[in-house]
Length: 86
View 1 (cartoon, rainbow, N blue to C red):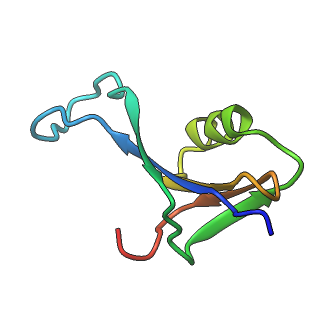
View 2: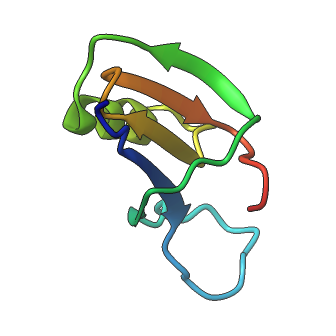
């Protein structure tokens, strides 16, 4: 029986201090990798038959994406707007 390995990748804005009303360049997003973790709920959309790098790129390209779970056994990506527990 193959073990399923899951990744939760949190896409968060880098801490840049206090928010200002003046238009500023958007802070770069960063990724925090947590292996063996899955946070259910908050799904924006699912992508199947994909890879971890493509899943990451899809999340970074989607402004509402705050995290994603990638299931390596199923090659499935779940983009998250508000994952449970975060």
